[in-house]
Amino acid sequence: MSTNAIGPGMEVTLHFALRLPTGETLDSTFEGKPATFSVGDGNLPAGFETYLLGLEAGAQETFEVPPEHAFGQQNPNNFQRFPRAQFDESLALEPGLVLSFADAAKSELPGVVHRLEDDEVVVDFNHPLAGRTVLFEVSVLAVTAAKES
Image 1 (cartoon, rainbow, N blue to C red):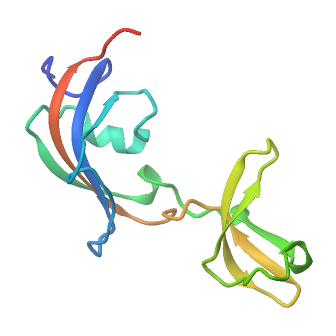
Image 2: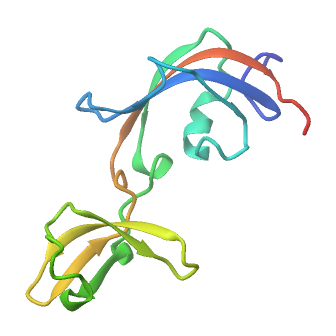
Image 3: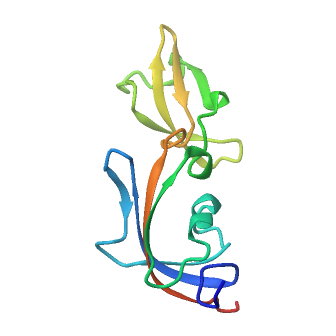
């Protein structure tokens, strides 16, 4: 691996796009400011970072990233049931509605109404892209030694 290749201790500047196999773009920097991160700093999920290892400035690639390297598989334990009575009557509950909940640490946690039952609401707390294969398109602009902090 050359000293200009993406790997541990390197800072990377790139444009990226995250797309579904249908072509729908979920996120992209191609029309704006590129992203910069240091390998291993947590700004890019490790599963995506793995695909970049060894690339150099000028590389343009598109990777098909399976769920286990992207946002994980759907976890059936992340579907929770709540009594309908816990929701404000004025709230128009319907599948797909995103609601904000507080987790045990009182941090905000988004959940999506999955299904309505007679007296319960089933909420999905999985990542919205869990279980989905995504396309990760990159154009590497620069690879340099990460700055010491």
